[in-house]
Image (tube, rainbow, N blue to C red; front, side):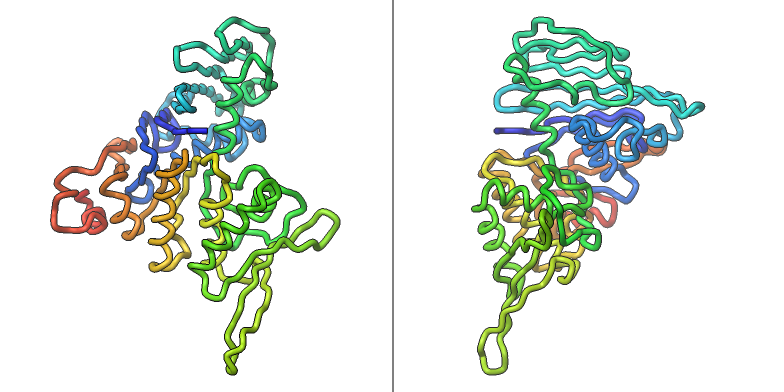
Length: 377
């Protein structure tokens, strides 16, 4: 399924007071610390979790009152996702109202509109109006203002457009890889990778269980970037628990090869990061994936990031996949920035804005990473 996130609008969230972001199939977000790059990913992750029905609006990963823009007096937040699925464009809007005085928050409006401006779902002040694929009205009912009402809609033959939107957003990957948090064991599989990839083994387990061939593709990619690596194995260590182990080979003094196994938590942080990063490219199947990645270059050596970037671009060009990356790394800036870069800046009022890289920066003699370091991009 072709899934392209075309635009994000954010109002009154941290430094994103009135923020509009137009996206390509591949987008690199550049900017100083505090310019809002990670905040963009946090918003998409919060919306994904809400639409998966896994959190309430006040949960820390969603939109509690603490995420309001501090220099604004308005107590309402608004978020919009505009995305294209196959040939249809969808607009999803969420409005949240806060009362910090009593610590209460609620969703005041949640609406989904299709390509031809057909309303597919509308929840206004807790009153849900369901619609069918042809735009005709369905049932109405009351709902909990503290969670996404859209997430609770049951898939039916008459609402395939709505459920295709939900499934696409739920499948998005929003991740900042923190290798030291990744557990080597999993009691069960997981359909969604965690914000920091801590549940990678469960996610991997679910992916290869459905499509065993993906494991081989992942292994072959890792063989090219990890010295001595041969294979991965999910070892049974309990009734339902599996442990991810890696097999390596080493050459002894007599030139014979010795093989040994290591748990995922026994390899280095950089190696764990590579396992996750290449997993993102090879464990999605052929359907494509939306990835929003925050500084994927962390923990990865300079010679290792370039091959991964080339595979990432190949994935986005050859499959219906999209990548949105935040990075300060010169290698990533110089590789992706000229064609795919957007600069995020905070103006004098503290509000963040996004703009394309200036043409003089692209035609000058200095590398884009050098210009970005000087603030001239």
